[in-house]
Amino acid sequence: MSLLEIMLTSIALAMDAFAVSISSGMCIRDFKLNHGLRFGLYFGFFQFSMAVLGFFLAFSYAGYIRSFDHWIAFILLGVIGGKMIYETFKEEELECDVLSDAVMNFKNMIMLSIATSIDAMAVGVSFAFLEVNIWDSAASIGIVTFVLSFAGGFIGNKIGGFFHKETQRIGGVVLIFIGLKILIEHLSIGG
Image 1 (cartoon, one colour):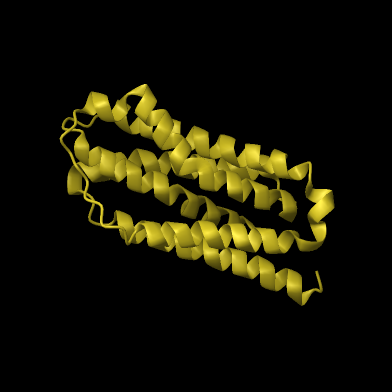
Image 2 (cartoon, rainbow, N blue to C red):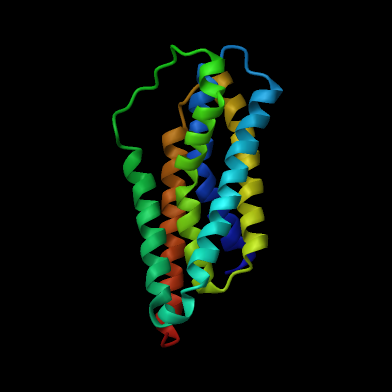
């Protein structure tokens, strides 16, 4: 994968965390720097960790499935992207009757971090089959997620959740196109 593809994947994966940060930022009345840092650190760390975990879980089995690894990458990225797009059409209204302590407590942050980083684990699996440098790629995923989650909290607090569904749709489309590109490249070289 090229550096551009890794950056686009990082941005696409960060869209769930970005959307959650915007939504959560809307619920915190007195949003401060430490709130943004907590979003960034939790979401960024879990995205990084899950990508690495997926990579190493899959890497141990890569030799067995090398002949169809491009299909796995295509399916995983397509499913993740499709799921991201599908979720934007659900009719869910954000309820903001909670205080900032409830939004930011340890248990909620861990659950949100795991929920938004499952996709990163699946991408880590596909990175193993593509022989991508996992440390550079996972660092990119973690850093981009940190930055977008940090900013998302402030954006949510200032303007509300007007755009979070659109950003998630764009992220889903990017992942689908990257998966399609991987499939086409491998099929065109007889893989």
